[in-house]
Image (cartoon, rainbow, N blue to C red; front, top):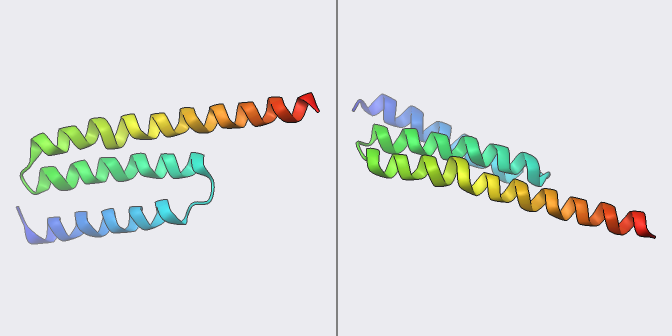
Length: 86
């Protein structure tokens, strides 16, 4: 692949990873993490590793953010129920 395409993919991955770290809200972090997973899948595909890209797409872009969002939802629900019981 072209070096310029690899460089663009790397820059997008670095910018998205920085944005994920900069987020304070866990729900937003999960959404940015999902975008990061998709960009990493694109990067792996550009680097001619489509099997790793597909694995990254399934785990990094879908499964991990989903688990984080479900955890955040459960924690917020428990906190709301606990505060409502007082």
